[in-house]
Length: 631
Image: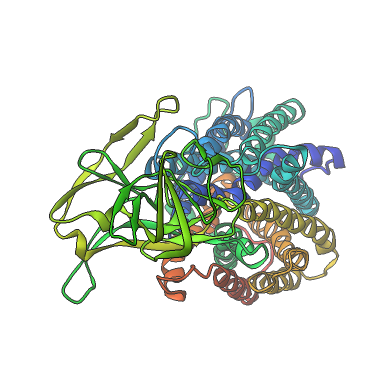
């Protein structure tokens, strides 16, 4: 078997350049997916579950891509056809995912579309990424593999920086960084558009610059069974490959488990952590359903839905927010009205537009209540006063304007919701799909379930405290997360330059993971946005080692014609820990906090740090030496 020739720096560069575009897509996904799903209305306890399908698909697809590419040969090459297919799918899905909240659908439907898009995006990104790793294994000799993967790591992090800062830069340029409830801001949507365009350009460049070896030349340099031009080859037995895998395959895989478990938590919970700790994002209470209580006052039956209507299609809970039925005066008079203005001064005229949110007033002291009471608490437009359902509001003189026309003077009043006005057995509709015609405002309900409140007087709203994703603070924090991830990428680039200087790969691997663990734990507690730069530089050290050393150590232990299959199987060490983390994330988060409090997402960053430290300990079990595979 011939020794592979040394390649020039630019040939090594061209082998991995497409990684730049692929990583932009991956960075946009990593930094914005939790923000997207939280904006669509997902509960923080459910965020990790949305990450199950992508690695699950990777668990199935990656070994298939690796094995199939080992057998493939056509005019384009062995690995490049899979790059093309993955990139095209990624470009299409990148244009779909950020628009999941723009189709007029309710939470469940928008999240379903987003989930399918995320699954396809993650799968296609990994399909496009895998060929670059295989090309290095195919065409680079052992002496240059460290340099080749370092170049790949550099391009990877450079692409990450671009992807991470896109929303921040677009906000600076003038794109809108906030949007209506359930709609993704322009900054995020156009970031995905620009990322898709760059990915397409990078793939075209790779196809122009990279020429794979023909089958005969490949076999001369890599050995293994002959790969025929017609693609026919002895069938690969993946189970047999696993049984005969070198010990390095398993020991590096153990380290990978702890590393990717930690980073799954970072991608899932950084947005919530930074928004609360560093940007003081306001909390909001969202209604998740109506609970019917037993004799002890405990929920006997919970009717769960973000949209609840009466049998005649009158909305009583809108997107998790209770609706205002009207006011109850001190004199005991109930006045139905959804557009309500409240004032403590003599009011000459009030004009209410667009559901009570846009007003014209001639004097000071006017406060406006939205027709939908957000979170059960109604605040004035200027933020001076707040009114809560069921709690009397009193003054020397209170003037209430109902529906912009009727004027009521009362010593005090209460704002009441529809649930408090119901009596007797009442039929309700739990809406799964709920849209409004943008022109007429007409209500459409589909896929809904009927339910009955046997005794509304003995029922209550079930609520969950979450961060207000419509707030300026939350969306500013979302942009800042991109900056922090970019800082992580810069730290990773710089650390990637240092890594080859260590005599022992194992020592540098373990040291990098310990530094990353310190970064994760500190990120859970730091409240200064700029001090968090330190945390994410340290996390970048771990990321650099995760990109450079596992594949270098593994490919040096592999020989023969099944490198692609082994690399595909090794990708399971990336997918499985993410699946485990996604399954356990909600459970762990629930165990750490109380149901009536904001979920402590910062603690998940601490747990990620502990996991990374365990990964550093597991590095000791790696035996790094070139070893022949038994396959």
